Image (cartoon, rainbow, N blue to C red; front, side, top):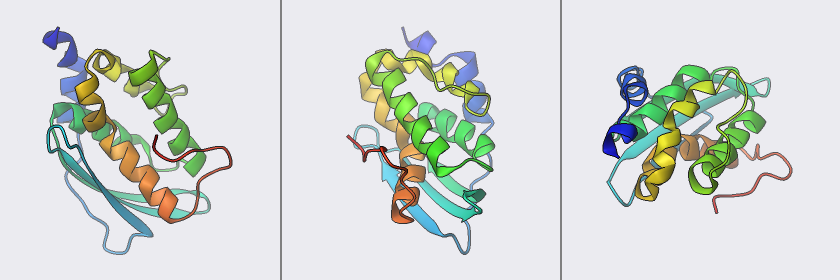
Length: 151
């Protein structure tokens, strides 16, 4: 039911998205686009000491893409590459395979996106910001052992 898809928590997360801000000197940048709806998210990362030190993003996305991007943007500073890849893998499993939401306090808000699992055509837009962050990490060759590329 669409009311589940656009729940209060999802709309609140979308509304809380930080203002668009691109970094002037990122270590890496990536843009991801949903072929289904045309949503697009660009991400810039600066890594220092093995963690995200600066994050920039511009999201031209639907409410679902904005909600996910908002949660990522508000929680990514201080995250390691391993944590970000684990987030991506957990979100994929939650949406595609009925898995549990991402573990840990940093990503606990992602649970609000669980209703999207029933709408496969919306999975790509929900994953845009996370996939873009992982593409940045790939460009920096920070993929931990065992992490796989986009399936």
